[in-house]
Image (cartoon, rainbow, N blue to C red):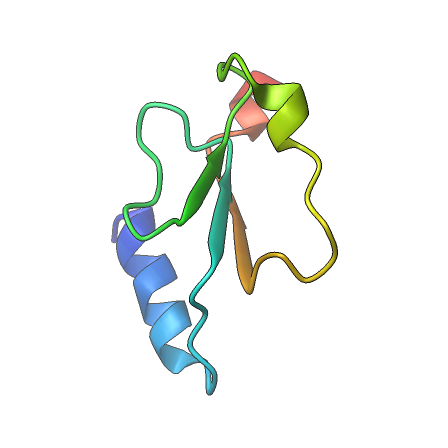
Length: 68
């Protein structure tokens, strides 16, 4: 099962549905329902990296291990 389908199933199982979703490392294929995408290839990565507490309801960190 593709990872987006697994994420969808997990989000559907939550009692409170997240509305603000951060995808860290989505790059060329980010999670389609992400409201914010943070990737090293973004020119404004450093500025975007400063998020306050409770900015997002759910975070996804996929497609990053192969880049480390």
